[in-house]
Image 1: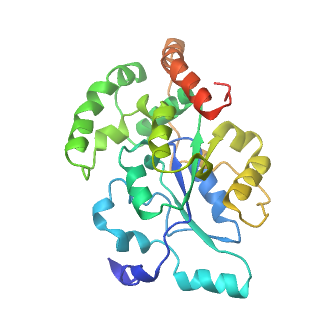
Image 2: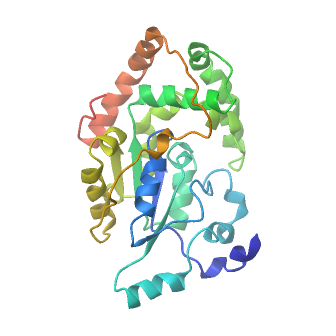
Length: 272
């Protein structure tokens, strides 16, 4: 567990969490919020405690965050709160993450970043290709998705601590049905503790979106000088993947009814 693990009981739990979605801008948002002077980021992005590392226990989870003493000093000396947070995109999608979060941090605020599900699915596929995790053409990968993830999902239902590798890796379409995932979180958290953002807004008008987030988190007013896109950075060359028009059309038709349900739930049209 390491030295930080030994001090786990003296460390904070997150005041807020970026819960997803995957390939929707969470890396950029994580960086933007980590820059805020009243925010102390965790040791790393994507801790995965509420999903694949839940068996490690609460002390292990706490070891990623600042000490309670540091937060108290900030209030006394700087006369301002010091919030800490984490960002794991799998949380939105994982069927048990919301319940686990509610037991651990029931007062936390939640941020979900959503992206046009067609663009998200394609980005997810390209990401898998780039990391050597996908060898099928995109059309075949999409058609085989249900078969690839169904066994993992059944295993996860039988054993909530299962790693569910294929379920997480090949869920190109399933992850883009956002409304059903958000409704799971709504069972455990009131709507006023959940901020849903459009990733297109995060990049088109970052300053305005950042102000909205700061107000939601009740942080002191502040923003970075610039908003680079950290989600476009790769360790190597980004793979060139040709996506046939009929694949995009198929995805658009597949997501259309779910997008309409999402707009009804949100009370606003995201323009997808």
